[in-house]
Length: 171
Image (tube, rainbow, N blue to C red; front, side, top):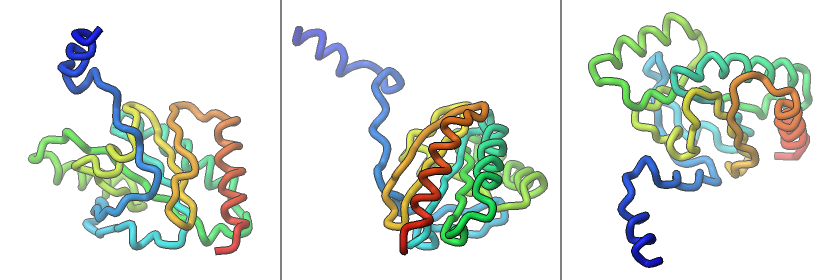
């Protein structure tokens, strides 16, 4: 039995379980594709919806983000909501960073945080090739975390209901 535990302790990193995701919005400073720095301090007191992925999951981000915006249009308290788009760019070779940034500038008019080191993607265990969604309340506490590809109306409804509840709460 003890030799089995010893063997498990020596398994290579990728076979080990991922660390538990953070339960609060971590402190960060990341630049978007326009070289503007964004930080957790900018989001203080806001309800935050983080939507992010690696390159393969990016098309799902657009679908989920648009569905959330459409579902909340006209909702009371919408001004308290901040969407935070995150591109998990870990592993991109340093010599391609400029090209990646320019491509984002050309294709995406709204700010997308370029997470070169995995600060946010790692903290919230972004699943590869999927859209990753995290909702934080005004105190920065993680209230919802999920991932997926195609739009799931049941999950979308759960997220929208949570956001409506959070927006209805006095700041």
